[in-house]
Image (cartoon, rainbow, N blue to C red; front, side, top):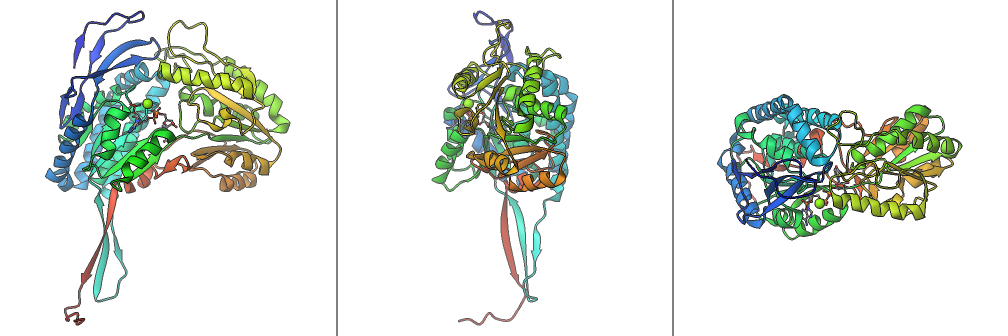
Length: 499
Ligand code: NAP
Ligand code: MG
């Protein structure tokens, strides 16, 4: 890594660090020499460059991952793979402050949230460090004169493509179970947020990850992501991102009948019954939608409120939303940072314009005037939104809440399930019977009761319907990186006697 003088630019306040990607255990430029600019969303300044990897770089990385897989990683014991992951977790804990600050500078998120992310990232590596030694096959009950078992084997080279909202945590969700399973990895971070995973790669060798076992290829989706999906030596693609790109990936992978797992977007309902604890519920609605600037796949962006508390709920939520402190994520008082990029800010602003025609505005609705720099959007609440409205059906991925009234349990369930997505949902009530009835009726891969968003590495993460398939986290994630081999052994020494 080297530093260069800052380029000209109106709001360029920091030096631009030139980063390299990580292939075969070495930090490398793109073969083409191309680079991408990396921004601080709070200042709009360029803080770094990273290589603009393309198909040639992907090929180098896949070769490195392939020779690492066949050359030794396959023979590394589960115990040692586990220890490697545990040592990496230790490094993340030791570097928590530095990595969190880098994550905030690159993604915009509040530093307090970035610190939680670093803790979750370390916990993820610890969990899979422990799980590496618990990946067992099964012995099968075949007739007495035979023996059969199912072996679990790593799929080989895994291609992994991740989004920009939780940069290091999403990398951990992918890399940790793949290594626990015995795979090698080529990971492409989002073009906007490559910095934290590249910073962590500096520790890979020291913790005992052999060269080629984990490769990080930076670049954009069409340039570096697409060739990874179609590379013939990549046995499996794990993708987290939008439904739109998920479809492209599935189509591209179809030609080689390549295994794919997809963690896509959502338009998750957060359902409030009139018997919920009111103050908690209002907090839960705001937290469920506005955490991480609303750039959360499981954001509870459709807030369904029972009619008898509807008006009071909107007033309370709007009053609280007004107190959310926007600002540079590095400021510890900040509760909401800028969106990740000017493109994302513009995208969200377009939805705000649509929303004005589809609902009534309770609070927010624009770009905050007090902040000179940064891709901020005000926390926004629309109400009297019909569930068929664009802002209630399409994933906005910003701090925009649509409040929708309902009369009874049946109507709440009907509205909650009426989107193409099915990632997450939450229900707030003090009636345990109602809570469980609703839990069972919701078509979603994650359902919370009296909370929204807490996420634990032990529990499965993934969606129903257009939110994708396959599961991350827990032992489920390891399945995504394993093959199953049936082995049958004839113990009968008599001739088979067929011919
Ligand atoms: P995105 O635009 O779909 O991009 C995701 C990743 O795919 C990026 O690394 C992107 O590269 C890459 N990509 C783009 N086009 C590609 C192509 N043709 N072939 C291969 N790769 C390609 O999503 P995003 O804007 O980064 O993230 C927001 C989305 O992620 C939301 O829809 C959100 O719901 C979803 N998400 C889901 C989960 C979950 O667990 N279900 C978690 C987090 C986020 P570049 O951007 O670098 O070009
Ligand atoms: Mg993108």
